[in-house]
Length: 145
Image 1 (cartoon, helix red, strand yellow):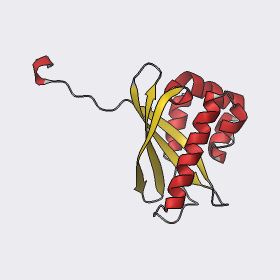
Image 2 (image 1 turned 90 degrees about the vertical axis):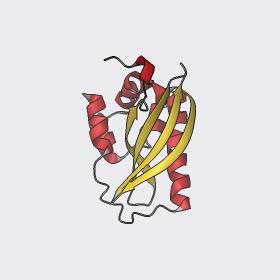
Image 3 (image 1 turned 180 degrees about the horizontal axis):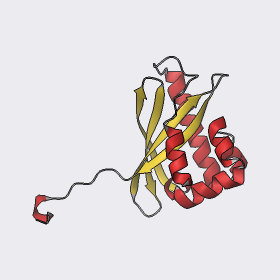
């Protein structure tokens, strides 16, 4: 249920983000926020990670400890990644989503879609993360009829 809540939060309209263009400064700040949050996860810094999420996410989880517990249980790939690589942005109207390729400690590759929200002061915060395995193809020789 909490995973569903995070997914739904990730697609809430970003009412405070009026311009659909992303500047190079925005790109750098968004990526820095995600890096800082992942670093906070690596150090079990619940306060630091929680400070980087939107007010709506903070309201959903209420405490930094509850937020970190959900990440620890349901989002292991971003909680303790082996490597991360930033991919493209998705900008649809007011939605700004940063795609991140994450390799977990077991060598499994994931795609993390970070919904980002611009705050009234101009800063960026994460507004949810949807974690999925990239699509896999099955060779024709292995298809079952």
